[in-house]
Amino acid sequence: MNLKKSIISSLFLAIGLILHQISPPLLMGMKPDFLLAMLFIALFINNDYKNVVIISIVAGILTAATTTFPGGQIPNIIDKLITCQCLYVICKLVKNINNDYIKVGLVSIIGTLISGTTFLVSALFLFGLPAPLSVLMVTVVLPATVINFIATTLLYGAVKVALKHTAY
Image (cartoon, rainbow, N blue to C red; front, side, top):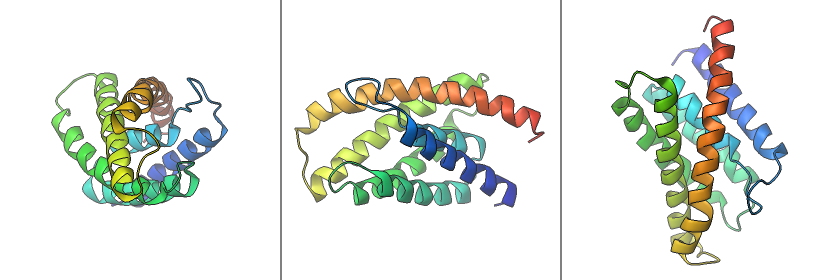
């Protein structure tokens, strides 16, 4: 993996972490997961397998360090490792779609669903959940999918403009 791709991916994750920390709650106390959105963009732009593995480990550690879910550290790491592996395959499958915004939108929707489901299922098996899985899927994962879809497509537009001006 080349150094330029590593630096850009690291910057995306750092920006996502900062945005996630400073963003206010929008819907029923839920905050947009900008780290997840920037993770999707980093995987979409730098989609080689070594990058996917490194990004998944770093994103898992960052989300584990900042989680507010009781016992959510290990499920966050598991979630990012599985989500990134799945998204690597999904990015390969959607590469023939001509519109980048459609591709990023699909990746964000599928990625958020995989991420939320993996997190909740792993938390269920490891520590238990504060509510039934189906309730958490409907009240947390589905609204988060909509919010992350909007956040990811908006951030991707900004990233695309920035990368165009830096001759990346």
